[in-house]
Length: 195
Length: 336
Image (cartoon, rainbow over all chains, first blue to last red; front, side, top):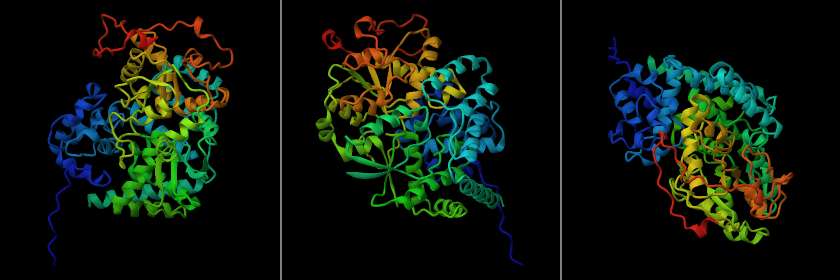
């Protein structure tokens, strides 16, 4: 009988690295703080990017995924180009976002909802749909700002910069088949990683 | 005439329609032919990749595969939107350097009867093509209505110059490419230290005060350097700075009015096109006083004399909680 190698569940650091394409270089972080100092929204984050990376190494998965930090990332890539260790910080923030959605830990649902609503329009039509996205989002998350948003929306309509109906690509079936297959592959890869 | 595969992106169909209209108007002047990728889909912006990784890459993989199938004597894809540009370029790059990702994306694409070999097409931003392929000299030769006296703030935003995998723009923090294009049109390009700062991105939707502060920094800088108009090259930047400028003003009790246009619209004006043809007049912040300075009248035009051109440089409020910004050194005669 062949001995079964002892398996250790993957650390949070390993999970984040595996979830980021290419070499994320996350383990190379030297905690210098250049990322947080370069970040336009760091002061509004629960934890600066540097703190997030320290917490990832400390395996504090819940607190990282509960924080608003990845969602307040504006994808400006300042941290990424300034990082002396060339850590792919913006890509890591994307990884943390879908891990947070999956773990369903982030308490304020506005940001994940925006992403999910955007995705549902793309999956159904092949194109994004600003009017639908804005309406659904404001109704649920910023009802008090709905009047102001509607006024802006009307002006956008009157200037031909918004449409009531979504655009649709021709091959929606093909696109859905590709996305369905991609989701299945991703799910099976995660199963393998856990096994 | 050079041919390019063209990926317009969702924004250019509607909210950034003036960007598309102005590009179409000037493509003959630039002697380029744009072949739209047939049945292209959304690039996913920054949202799809937040929800799922592989589907987001497969989404862009489909566009790249369609482009490769359609490449007829050209393998360069031009994207005018910075987010589309980066998403397509990033997918191609990560498929090239991550064999597992490449295999998975192609596995997914096979479900739709498609395949893409990374590196088959090259993805480039419109500004990159205009600067490197068409060139400053060719632009100068086409100018019939120089934008003399128009003070323009050159705004790049983020995703065009960062991460800039191929180093096409020279500097990820203080590039000069757009400045040179605008100067070739005869415009006065103002110093703009925040030229690659963030416009707020999706924060307008998920936490507006965060976005308002980012918008304020840009508008404040443009106003302080006495720019008549701000030129952008990204639909998201244009939308945030133009459509949310009013909300930002309300939030900070300010009254800035900096019109935001696409650089292609300014090129079109300099090349002698009519403002309507370039989609001018669809902005939320009125660009007419600025355009009057170069003798361009948009329908129902107010003359420059009747419009106040007040400046706000010294108008910082005592209870303003934001960080102070250095004041620009502008001589009086410069400003007039």
